[in-house]
Length: 326
Image (cartoon, helix red, strand yellow):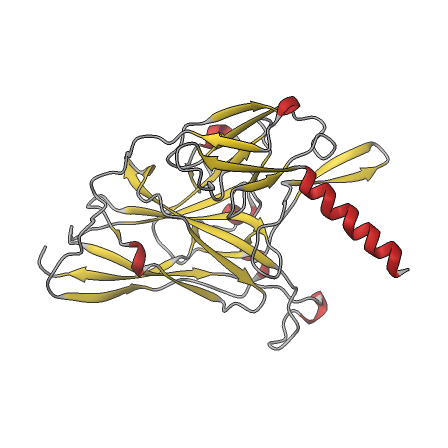
């Protein structure tokens, strides 16, 4: 029995290795972490921290082309019949907006906190998928220089036993999910150009607090006068060490009518709220609708249970330094 298990494990490892492809910078040969690999049919995957992803014709028999993108690089289209083991992406010229302050301001500052909004209701939560990205708008009404130091991200874990979900100390459903944070400028009320090329990623498990505190002081993110969009993006499940696994956007389920593709959902849940007066949450589906942002409201999204209940916003909060000189 042990011998059979050993050979099965070897087979699985060799299968993954055989279909593993690395994405790297054409000039520096450094890995391009968390690149987006779109299949052009509404599906896709992400590369891991080492720029690697798994693709085989057996795993994705109906895919003939890949569209590979990453912030700061030109999009590349590849035919799946002749994929190399290493793919080179050509870097773009630096297009970062001047609002990114390279030298920290001097002088006095005050700490300010925008409190997160959270709750414990399972049925008032966003169920993340691998294509989801959710952006929250934070204005800069006084036009002062503000540096974001922390993000407060509400999450909701689930009880492993649904019948015991209301008990405080019940065992939680196990998971390990990798998220990415993106920062966008305000382009006439929608998320516009990216404001930082740095990869800000973090991992959430069933043991994480109900508000995940992410310290981004070292990233030197300053809020432009027109405000900033802070976005949370789901990359997928990881192993116990935090390495991104080969996640699929959908699972294939056999039914009497044939194979049905069911969207893969990820944990934790993201609590949405009706306690924020302004509609400041925006969403996009990375592999669909030309990667276009829309405001999360009824006129843009039909048949959504959260919107039907008046839950328009993800209750993200932040801490920031507000400099007094400007």
